[in-house]
Image (cartoon, rainbow, N blue to C red; front, side, top):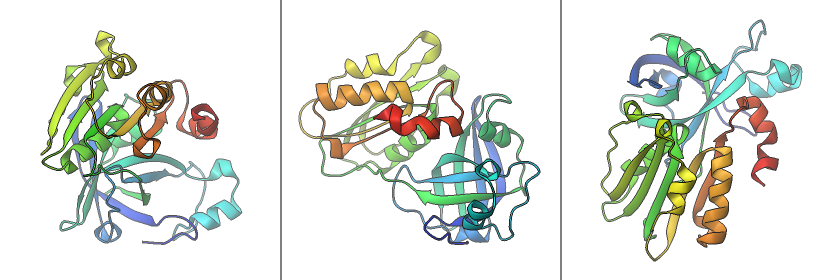
Length: 265
């Protein structure tokens, strides 16, 4: 595992197996020497970035991001896609990423649909910043498919005496997954195909009294509207709110990263 100066480690990973969880979600499990020494950071939104080389571009071996940035133009840097570490099995030396697939569209999804055991890939990480706290009265977890892996990991980490409201927006019933938790959870799946809307759903929620810790992630326009609602109308503590647009409709990942700060301001 190569440490990058001022950055995160580069992990040489090998695909161990894949599993189709739903029509649009594939789990890719990685192993290898670097993965065996992977250290989870304790956040339930712990993530790694999958690096996709630009076709026709040669990179230094072993791969070094600082060298790439210093010697190659930005358009030749590897493309990156960010995925939550859905499971980390330290004993087996494996990590699992759940990846959305939309046919041949998109970089990461199309890769996940064709990757095979034995294939090698570079990962970068881990990163992350959120985990459910035990000193709050209520947890609010809201997101679309892109946030489902982090929300699923959060539900598994909820203390047994915790109370949570969970709302998940997916295409239809075929996208439901079994989600485990020890907490008292009010979980509702919403279907895009039926015209469901997360903003409307959250506005109608009754969360009760006390402190609320919230994790709200997904499509950027939805997230921006909910941020205003939760902060201004509900008066949630900004320090207890993890909220970000994972993606924006009509934008590639690269384009979204360029405009994200201004859009979410």
